[in-house]
Length: 100
Image (cartoon, helix red, strand yellow):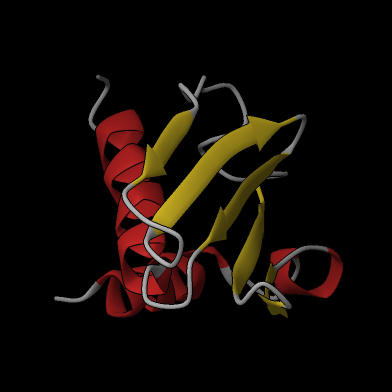
């Protein structure tokens, strides 16, 4: 399963008739080029879990920065790293759910 498919499943699991009306996931483009992603953590099982910042800098177009900032998981990444970014989020969500 791809990172995006896993993110879709995570989102579907949290859409309960209430969460999606106040919170959600935002995916936007950057002008350098690349992507930004913000996932609301409010009212999810990730609210109380810490995330260790991830910094990957392979090349000018192959990079990724992921962090938790208050109640949001935030990613900025290169143009070809969106699926990798989603996988990093989903790996963290799965580890947190499993108690690691």
